[in-house]
Image (cartoon, rainbow, N blue to C red; front, side):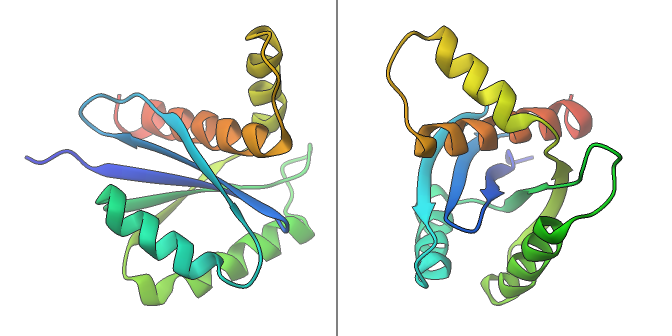
Length: 135
């Protein structure tokens, strides 16, 4: 059985953090950040192709009480716009992943940007998904 190649998206209104992994190694890593500028679907389609991705994992935002928010609606609309790409999509809870990502970056003692936080948050989301579904 061929490994599943995952791309994970941490979707925001300004940036989309992207991470990658496959079901064989199960190691998620930050890949890039896509700027939301009206060309994000084309950029994402190119990434899916270049990475040979077979499944998208998308961070699913909720508030501290586990309820949906305006950002949840935004993410759901974004995912609906991905349908023409013809790739399987699954959601993974993204609670506190940006906080965890920033903590990891702080511990690395290297300079980092918001783009780095978004890409690392996507890696945290993808790690959570792999641990829950492919352990």
